[in-house]
Figure 1 (spheres, rainbow, N blue to C red):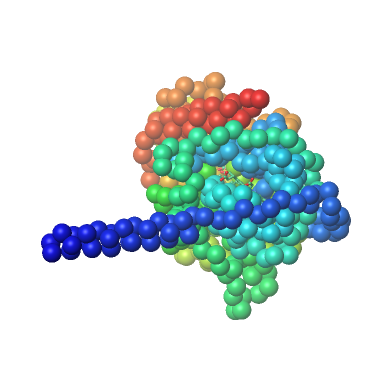
Figure 2 (figure 1 turned 30 degrees about the vertical axis):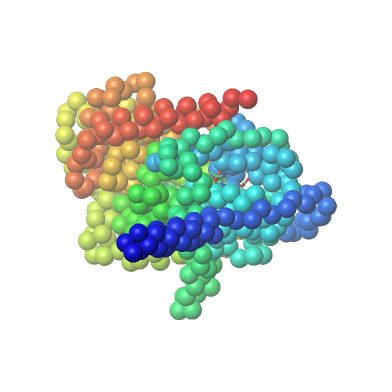
Length: 447
Ligand code: HEC
Ligand code: HEC
Ligand code: HEC
């Protein structure tokens, strides 16, 4: 009697286990989609290809799918994640190593569901959690653009991920938890520009992939959208009401910054934002305006305290109240006078130089000094590559201790923000990040 009950119980156990296995397989398994000689067979309309080019620029596809010094769209660029490095794939229309044999259906599934043609789940380092909001005609246009690029034979290196993140099947469960396959937000109360902006920012433009903080499993925190994120060892500042900007952004200034990479009250787009604005330079004006309108609305109207701080910063920047607010060390203050003041001015700006008055710098106002460490160490380069740097790098001129002292001084002298915590830790974090990024790039450039 007893034994019978136990065996019946274990029978139930087996049934449950089998059901769980079937459910898991159902979650994980995706069919392979057969290949077709698409790139050779179908002629694409020039107009469709052109629209695809503009959309691909908004999607920043080239920035991720081109390795340093490598052929366009041929992949192999390391994307650092907290779980290790993912290498972007070859999306040129090469039939063997690229996506030349992919049908529109296979391409659409990759963009919408993050599933490769052969049924493998793709890592969300590819921001399909945003691309999923693209409308079909836009996916078709990007497809036409990609399929008319130069085919390149190239295979990316294997990913470098820690266990268990190296198991692709688990991505299926990540998607169950975090992939929201919904259209972009639409709001009938808002005008067409806002709605177009919402579609581009939340979808193809994937601004939140960098500007939104992520949870322990690498998914964007929906309740903290645009509250500031991290990418490639840079802080992507908050774009919502928590924006650190000394002067609150408005649609006009956002437009200037996104279109030209520079706004005279905010400074230059540096680091991973530089390729974004380089791409936006080729996008139709209306789309850049729509993005600006949507982002400005997201930040909202500044409150009274914010407006007051902004007018104080502006007064200081215009020289009306130019005296530094104070210093943390006279040694650092003289470092500033010797190395920086010729461009940024004795108290912030030299009239003959376009350098930003540091009272208007966002990087000095962020919660951590990482971006400021990078800018002072590596300098500032013009967004249209090449040419003299706008600001020289001071990596060889300053010791770590001098850099830390200088940054502490800048924070106190030019902002009303509380002193940064451990600046030395930031310097170490930046250096470690760069060392591992360099190793990944070297791996990608090996034949
Ligand atoms: C933030 C970086 C990033 C951006 C931006 C990006 N991708 Fe990717 N993409 C990746 C990575 C990384 C992979 C590989 C993921 C993996 O191996 O699981 C990938 C994979 C893909 C794949 C699947 C290829 C295959 O062989 O399975 C396609 C298709 C693709 N991307 C197209 C695009 C297009 C089109 C755009 C622009 C609209 C774009 N990607 C923008 C990082 C990016
Ligand atoms: C690949 C990551 C990445 C993507 C994608 C990205 N950004 Fe950025 N963004 C950054 C980083 C990093 C910075 C800081 C750069 C600096 O200090 O110059 C930045 C800076 C900015 C700033 C300046 C903020 C300030 O107060 O100084 C704005 C505005 C901005 N981004 C808007 C956008 C918009 C709009 C999009 C989408 C169209 C976007 N970004 C997409 C990484 C990104
Ligand atoms: C040759 C002129 C020049 C010198 C010297 C120089 N800078 Fe700059 N700096 C610039 C320019 C140009 C920019 C980029 C334009 C902008 O953002 O206004 C810049 C940007 C910056 C920023 C980023 C502002 C932002 O966007 O948040 C910081 C911080 C900064 N400089 C600090 C320093 C410090 C510290 C020194 C001295 C160690 C220094 N600079 C020396 C010209 C210079």
